[in-house]
Image (cartoon, rainbow over all chains, first blue to last red; front, side, top):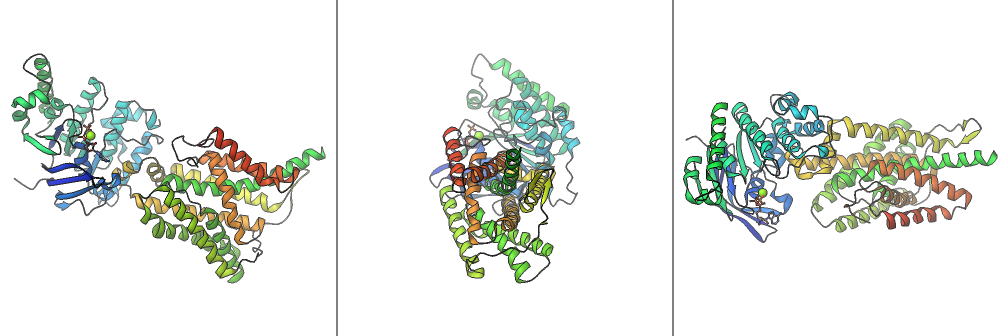
Amino acid sequence: MSEPLLDIANIEVVYNRAVQVLRGLSLQVPAGEIVALLGSNGAGKSTTLKAVSNVLSLEDGELTAGRIDYAGQAVSARPPHQLVRDGMCHVMEGRRVFEELTVEENLVAAGYALTGRSDGGRVDFDLVYEYFPRLHERRRALAGYLSGGEQQMLAIGRALVGRPRLMLLDEPSLGLSPMLVEDIFTIIGRINAEQGVAMLLVEQNASLALALASYGYIMESGRVVIDGTPDKLMADDDVREFYLGMGEQGGEQRSYREVKHYKRRKRWLS
Amino acid sequence: MQGLIEFIEISLTGLGMGGLYALTGVAFVLIYKATRVINLAIGEMLMVGAYLFFGLAAGLALPWWLAILFALAGGGLLGLLLERAVIRPMLGENPISVFMVTIGLGSILVGLVELIWTADPRRLPQFLPDEPIFLGPVFVFPEPFWSFVIAAAVIGVFVLLFRYWRGGVALRATALDQGAAYAMGINVPRVYALAWMLAGMIAAGAGMLLGSIAGLSPALALFGLTVLVVVIVGGLDSVPGVLLAGILIGWIESLAGSYLGGEYEHLVTFALLLVVLLVRPWGLFGTPEVERL
Ligand SMILES: Nc1ncnc2c1ncn2[C@@H]1O[C@H](COP(=O)(O)OP(=O)(O)OP(=O)(O)O)[C@@H](O)[C@H]1O
Ligand SMILES: [Mg+2]
């Protein structure tokens, strides 16, 4: 197997020099693939992404052990904006759109990701509007007035502006209606397939994430407890019970059908 | 009729001062919004700008327009230097410590100016047109008139820059959410430097205008106190608020000074400050969760 695009090896993260949140976590994301990172609240998923995009220091967090390589180079040596310019875009938890800027200005700001690229630095608005026609309709509106779903579209659209090789997606389904979640996930799948963007996808909605991903990791208390292909994870009894919400009885049928539905969709797309 | 004309004349003179308050207030807000630093050295930065102009135009006998350009550049450089050498190393420290450090910086700047030029009052070389101005029957002093016009033009240019220039978008984005700005690939420390540099240039420009109205002495730095009142009244993080408050306070001061006597000028200003602090501690246009002074 060739070298992965993102390689996280045995990292430990401590906040405020006191609270240890990650305890020897390792995972890999191969180029062009979607990898799901699942786990319950407080497991350290967002912290993992922050370590990768090197923004821990903004929250008084520190990488105390281990190593993170992106495209063959350590991330710790590069400031966060440089990583973005090198093609790693972090779509943060809670969307974080610039509320007092218009949709279009949000995309202009995202254009800084293109600084220093060989292919010139022009923002390709059309690419974003092609995936998210709704954003085109609302391009002059202040981002703060967008609905939750539209804000999530904008958050992903901003990442798209940077023409990334790797997207870090932190709970894109958070707070959205089931129908919107479906739309957003379809588009995430399309971006992966059509733009060749690798993705590290953090989700609470495990069945959806596994339907898109080619590999999954499940973490608890700062380390990976089980990993494998989606088929393997979905066949695992513990995973089914605790993460997919499929006990012995009840919800099983429906949720599984939903997962199948996504698998089909993915095959159809790629 | 005579009373009305007098009232208009006094008001217009007040607007002249108000334009300078607004201009310097914009410099203050720029630094606050981008870096969350309450910069109490803004009055001293303004004074340094006026002395730079004096040194270049009177000392080195440069043509006035060249002296202005260099003084603006010097003000920008001073802003960059302060950010790089003093403010950036304090990133992440308690805001009160940073705030105290800017007070210290102010004293250092006054000290430097007194070392080079002594504390004696001086006359700034004339660069504003000095023919008296008549708007119909109303007479306006030329210096406040022209400094208002220039301040308004400069403010206009900056408002357009913030709105349409890509760097202006980066500035506003960074002011709203530093972490998200990093995630866009924006070089956040560079934006901080840019904010300080622009604020330094604005302050230097305001200093030259103020110096040509009020004469030159280290006491020019006290102007910063009224500017502080202006930004608290307008809202630390609001450009429109600061523009309005600047004009308002310039006008009220002028009225109080003329009708009640000079000693009331500042009394009225601080009374206004007190009222605003009691009723809307975050200022007329500010955001409630920002620091309350
Ligand atoms: N800035 C911080 N300072 C101190 N502790 C923090 C900080 N950020 C997160 N933590 C703690 O680290 C742990 C992991 O947080 P993290 O946000 O990585 O979890 P998560 O897996 O993303 O959870 P969720 O699913 O709720 O988003 C939590 O216990 C949290 O309280
Ligand atoms: Mg999280």
